[in-house]
Image 1 (spheres, rainbow, N blue to C red):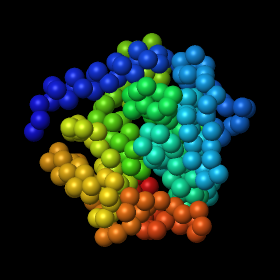
Image 2: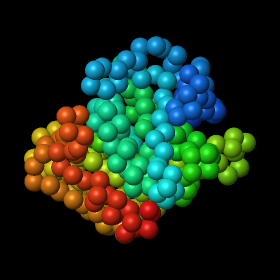
Image 3: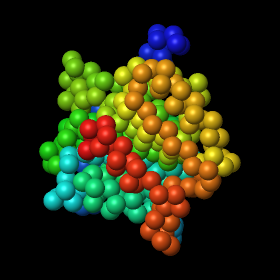
Image 4: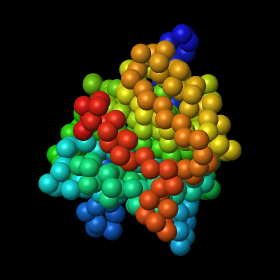
Length: 286
């Protein structure tokens, strides 16, 4: 087992850097809409208006991080929620394929979805660190306002695709369980999720997950030529070594986009939602 002190130092340095960059702020609504929440007040994140969305629903140049709420079917709501971190190499966010087309399926299973827009390279000069601050703030906000969205704060998970999985793993590795004596109510809230779902995960270098890593579902395609399938196998082995409940599903083909929802059909090339829902039930998280 790797040295625990080194893991703690890494987590502390990440969190300290995020705190210095962004401070403590309150969430606000975007343009008065009730389903989208801006994570930081003006001045704490860049106020640049470079953000744009192309015809395929891919978002670029995010400088004002936010999340959009896709509520569970009220007749089926189980209190479980997932923050989805779309992929795109920290250069873009594939919001349509990873969030917008996925959310209605999960909503019908009783799951509330929060689609996260996190900061990206260009104009950011340190996108992974800024994005980590964004997802930590999202977890804090959702847990602190859980009743507003019909969410159980102890059934909040994170899901990522590719670079979004890199972000999800960074969140797990940071292992921020809150600062009880902080004067900031949000800082008291743990940002460690209750479960993780990793799709074709890209992993931070030399990742060392903590012992309290939550149950994790991992899926990957054998023929992925962008992120080697060995990444998923190595993560599963590390989780097994820690005694963390983990499930690994490897499919033979589909490449790096195997689990993307297709705009033409509204379905992924490789089906996965039913299996994830069944896994959540088995873990008593749904």
